Length: 209
Image (cartoon, rainbow, N blue to C red):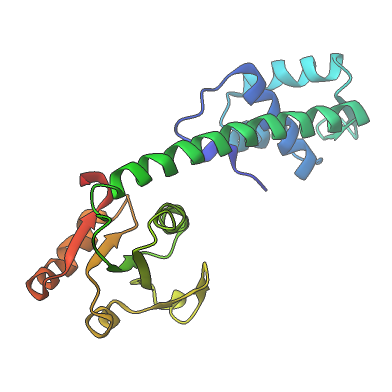
């Protein structure tokens, strides 16, 4: 299930709230309005208002099972509405992703000069690393020689065609650059590997390029 409520940046517009409620009902028809409010990150009063609005628009059906329990379901019109809202939301996310990748490309252009040849290791095997890899592909002279991560559960797994290894493997790879592909833990990671700069390895935090 798409967890829309985890976003800290999407504005809670009416369309966004409708999408959140429709998506919640789609995945859990037996859900109570109280639980619906918790999952969609809305107040109970607001959920109640939107539920009645969606019912009046014939986007959802409400079945009274007994005095307390109700069953919600999407009508064919509601399913179509949900699909269209998801497509619009996805289009905005893709645009934001493209803009963020372009920002990285412009930043890396200051690092990877055309006259050089660079071996790069990414620290962090997550969604951020995937975007960094896409950006680095624009620089033919920069080769991603490995991905390392502190999480033992990721060791040995293939991420974007590259095997994830423990941080200890950095010394064997001997890269020119380590790019910390994590925003949330970049300072912590930097402190753990800053000693590698003594081996003539450049350590880059995305926020400081």
